Image (cartoon, rainbow, N blue to C red; front, side, top):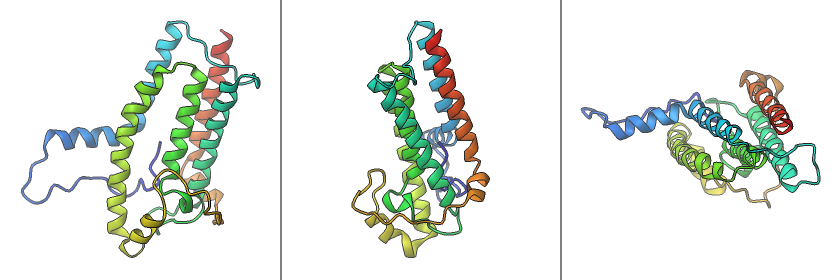
Amino acid sequence: MSSPYSTISSRVSLGPGRSPTLLPLVAQFLIRRRILLSGILFSLLVAGDVAFGAKPHDLANFRDPLSVAGGLLVLSGLALRSWAVGILRKDAELTTTGPYRLIRNPLYVGSFLMMFGFIALINDPYNIVLILGPMMVIYIVKVRQEERLLATKFPAQWTAYARATPRFFPRIARASLTADWRGSQWMRSREYQAVGATIAALAAIEVWQLI
């Protein structure tokens, strides 16, 4: 799950003459390796499900509510990420249009929608606790860290924007969502990698449920 402002430095300022303690160093390690760690954790849990004979839901079974819900969550999350990436101008400006008009962190929200979708499809409720618990802690810390940096980088805009725009849960009444989406920006952000990985994961789930 990439950060919408990933080019902004995420180093913790400890102040002059202060030595880093273990906890901040561990936190920074987890934040910087969050994508790798979430991938490893998810892979281990899926391997355990396969080993113990768990069966995922069939994506093609439209009469199965969890199949439909899981597929829609994955696709909705992927679409939200692609929409957000295509209008984001990293470091050049504070992006406040499109999905950023509804929520401050659409990339993270999209990633978590996808995670919920895959958990529904894999059909192991214990994964919710084992994956979402640790990941939510890491990403909440990351979001707060990024927002402090954005408040410093865009002081004239940030306060009003943060006051008017929720972090994660949109205000549906705010309906003006026009934005300048650019395919070139989408490509530069390499969001096609997320699309490719999602297609591969969905195909793997279909093969798995046939075994």
